[in-house]
Image (cartoon, rainbow, N blue to C red; front, top):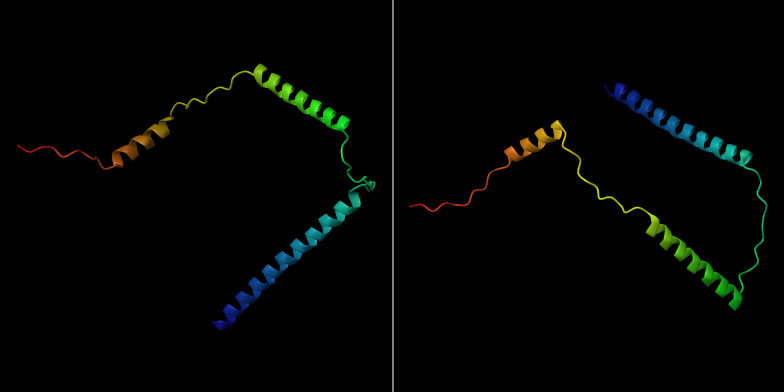
Length: 114
């Protein structure tokens, strides 16, 4: 009995190990393919950001205002959004809702006894 159990555990251990080994190999292959197929990019050295001059700030402000105006015009020209209307119930939905309502206990207010 224990021999069968030991054999089952050994087979499971080998299977799990193989899965992780294959995953690692696939990961390595994908990383190698990415490195081989990606064109080398040119290294650009960017100058450190300096304080913007007042002329640059006014240009940037004008661009922001133009973008805001463009968005306002686009929103005004867009057709109004339609409110979603609930779709008609399918026969299956009607049956299920009816069944659920019939399964609920009915709460009736107490009646006055004469």
